[in-house]
Length: 226
Ligand code: SIN
Ligand code: FE
Image (tube, rainbow, N blue to C red):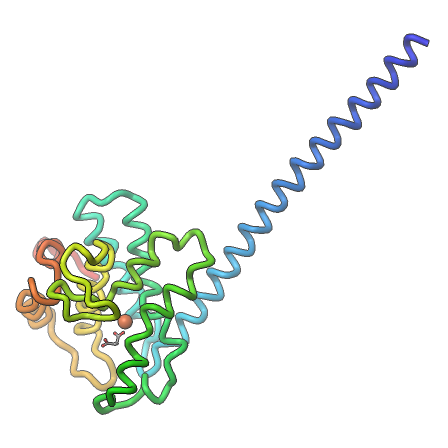
């Protein structure tokens, strides 16, 4: 009877181990599924991002350039690797909230009416809400929400001042303005590199964090190209 009992125990143990292994596999599969879902969500978001820049001949150019510039500034400022990565996502997705702004507002060649402006000014908040489910974007979201704030408090959506604005938001503001001036939208005459740098200097302390502007200008003076 003894060997048989051992045999049963062995079988039970195998069963138990199989069970544990199964559960581990299920756990891993679930983790992988979640990762796959998150990856799919990110791919959808990126596809959406490609659709929003109406009126621009090369849709992703501005977002990609903003991401590159923001990434370089954050690295130059010796921010943590996490922050540098978050700032890059923030650059890529800063205007994603525009998918809820009607096209006639986005495409309008002339100045916007007050009502149209109120709608336009929602895009940082809409973007933040849209990305909220993705844990990968956790650090980028407050930056995206703050990319139109100005250090003198005259920005939107909240009119935050100085370092009330998350640092990543201050970085995105400079990178976004730099890229928008250089790449030139359809209805806006593009600036030369020198004009762009002068404009950034001029708006230091009113719109932009001077430390961030200085970091970008030093990169460019060293021959960095975007
Ligand atoms: C933009 O998101 O860059 C356009 C809206 C604005 O000029 O504030
Ligand atoms: Fe924007």
